[in-house]
Image (tube, rainbow, N blue to C red):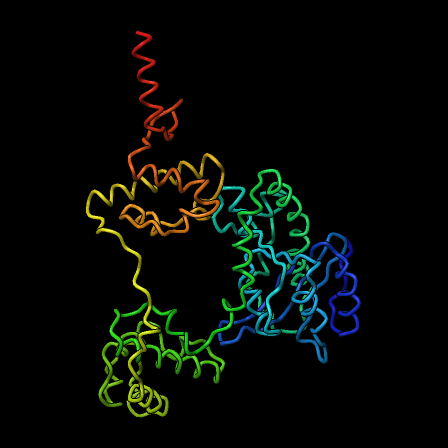
Length: 400
């Protein structure tokens, strides 16, 4: 594979993207800094196909990333392959307003062909290629220039290894027939709404203090205000105020600015500084949330109680057994909260729909309905249908 010198000009980037546009797939990774900023600062982009790889310096004077962004977001003929690509996609959305498409994430794919949940890149490389990655440059300051040869070599390795691993993962997916399982997961990854933060909707990401319209109205107003403050100052929203503090103020609003000094999580300076004044104005103007925006109640059946909790535990045990039997990550099939809802009588659940129902949901439902039982077969815990057990017992008695 040819490894190019660090790309620092628009002309060199155009030439690279023109060649890569003829590929079936490209592997992509980014290096960025975001510890002290609201917006992640893109510091390096790595991209490869099966024949060549390059690192692109987005901080180089005069470079225009448009050819790269067009390749990633407009070219439907080239599959864009990431590993745990959520933050990489977020950066691309911030730059272009669009997500890479079509898209493939090897971390998600690994869940469909193994019991690995959120496998790290280094572990995946070791598993598929038998290579150990030098992590020495992992926590480097990617914004500092010039970049060292070691930094660039480390960064490019993320896409060169991935370009060798992806075809192997794809072949295994084809053999197992599980590629279709991932279609919906990959489309979620490509949904722009997952990455564009609307300040008016920021409150929905915060653990909500009940369903009181007035409290939720303040929570919505405060969350939108905090988002605007953080964006304007380009600092992490938590530097303005933590979620817990914001929710506490929404539930127990101070009557005057001096009371802010008593709020846990705020410094005493809030009692008379400008940001404290702006906060109080937001609280004073907050309106009760509209009924149309009221969050949906969680789907619940009957209260679990002791017996229901035991049923939920049995469902989780069944999940472990099935995941082991078909060599798939349990998290791809369902989550603990779904098992608890199923045990409580809820039936409108993803696990009872589509391929998840065929692979696991049907058995889970039959277990709840008393049609399945646990059994030990050849020293391993397995599931047995009640009708089959009755037949086996009858045959055993007849043989006696």
